[in-house]
Image (cartoon, rainbow, N blue to C red; front, side, top):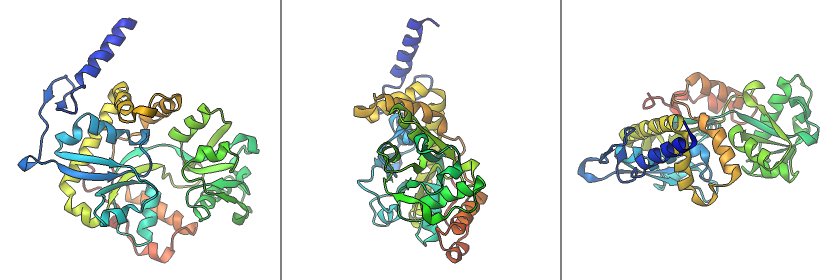
Length: 344
């Protein structure tokens, strides 16, 4: 196809979906009326994000912009946290219905006795520990005694992750108390760039690595999955058990709408980029944002389910590393905090 032909094709695709907010635009370009619940009312779902809006939330944005939520009879409000919040408390207080979290935090909350229930995965990337090559780090064992930036510092999470990797690399005599601790929140790249930390954990490969590379930093990362740490760089939807059961039917429609949006992302990546650009207008044109988007587009799974074995291994690691109470964890079956009931 000639250059003019390519541009024309893109314009045709964009024109096809230009009316997505007024109707449901099908893949053949036709526009069908939005489906509403009985009585003409859409069911409102207040969905709390775990961080500011970013490309990790693309299926939620596409489902909203393309009309999939409305077609499913839903009015979904995406809510960014002003600061860190305890999602289950927001749901219990009636300010949220659903929240985004990570499997790690879901398991930790369950072990702490909080009323949480995860029900659908929508994002899965590689990730782990980003490190500064200029700090003399070439392999995981070199992280022993380095300063770690991680949310929750000075708690046990960061050292538990790094120490597991160090030991998996064959260094069994590293003193876990030797690590420096720095709380840079989720601004991992800032922590490395400012030299406040040598390594930063809980990073997502699709986000922090492109961001750091675009800033010209000399970084790389060690993947959780390669060095003994459960692969928890994923995003899931959760609620309280009570709210989940009261909204089960609309939540099933929410999952199906997100699944349809994932199909659009995979099949029409340029359209997905356009939706994201429109949603976050003021920052969307930056080179960093575009680099992150490119790395993120393949990170949305078609399968929303998660195996109970996965959560059992994750909980066992949390107990082994002293991040949750072993007795409390043994009393909580996976079925109490994760269900695949509406994911298939």
